[in-house]
Length: 223
Ligand SMILES: C[S@@+](CC[C@H](N)C(=O)[O-])C[C@H]1O[C@@H](n2cnc3c(N)ncnc32)[C@H](O)[C@@H]1O
Image (cartoon, rainbow, N blue to C red; front, side, top):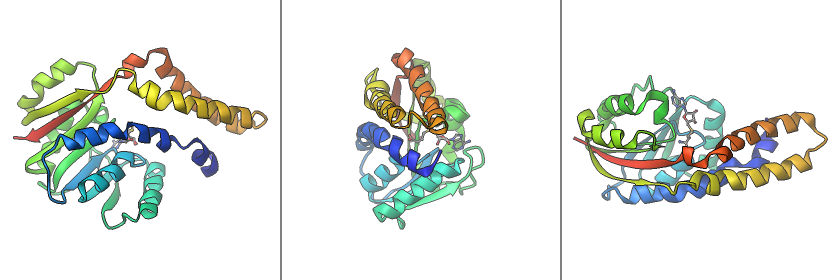
């Protein structure tokens, strides 16, 4: 996709509408003095930037997608956060940070890549004693997840569900309006229309059954 079309779609603008849930989860943590935060699967960094601002600490975002990391990098520069937000291109399967490097680990929409159980087991070593893990994940098998958290070495401090249709009403529905506007604008440009069609396909998937995309935040402390 051309950089301009990406800016015109501006998915981060819509993703930002869900930041109120990031803020809500962050406020459920005890106050920490300038914590060091690891954001796993940070993407273009909507939560990463939010967390750096909320915590007044330092955030490290990791992801495997260089295009998204480049977008995050531009935002870091624009926001003047270069001394507080760091980016690393690496996979969550190959994180080589030393043990006890972070006060908080944050993972929105990414733990499914490694699996809830494996993530909880493997990420534990990266936190300082008593550190915190916040995961935003699907609600599928939620009761099972909640029950098993202590057996992976964590205390569940809190959790909350997003409104069942939040991803639809707050993200995909307004995004669809933007995509429709752009399809009208580029109606004679088949290349651009093909890109817009891919966005629409993703939207249609959620539209068919918005409740399937319900999600929750899990707030945990390392035992
Ligand atoms: C649904 S997006 C969430 C992005 C961001 N956390 C947010 O909430 O806006 C999932 C992210 O996980 C990243 N990802 C996928 N596989 C990964 C891996 N093996 N290691 C690190 N990140 C990965 C993707 O590139 C994508 O940016």
